[in-house]
Length: 133
Image (cartoon, rainbow, N blue to C red; front, side, top):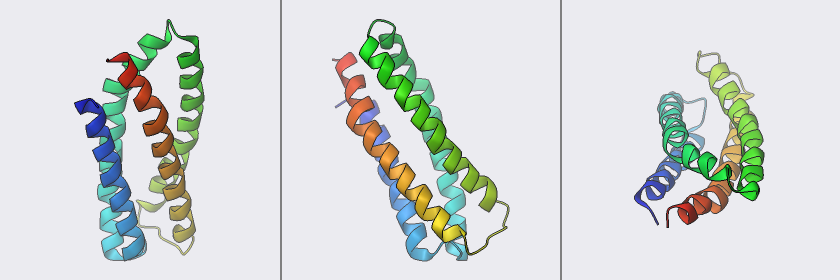
């Protein structure tokens, strides 16, 4: 496996671990809130790295690979949905306006993010590895 994909998987693991820690601490707790801010920064950094280093390679290859192009289209639509869930959550709860609904919304965020990571690692990262063999 390439160093880049290893790095992305490590990022995913760290983000998920932090989200689990927030869940254990309680999203409404002071510690949970502090971790929430740090995980947002980590997530945005990770997404930026993927946008700069992963997706351009896949998009270039998709110019000659219809199956990959279709796959990327599906992932793009899914990412719009996941991004909306994530950013809505952070926009709503990063301004210290916390209510009891945060727990349920956090669970939704965690589930959406886990699902996205699983698909990304199982499908897109594998495609990237095939291209770089």
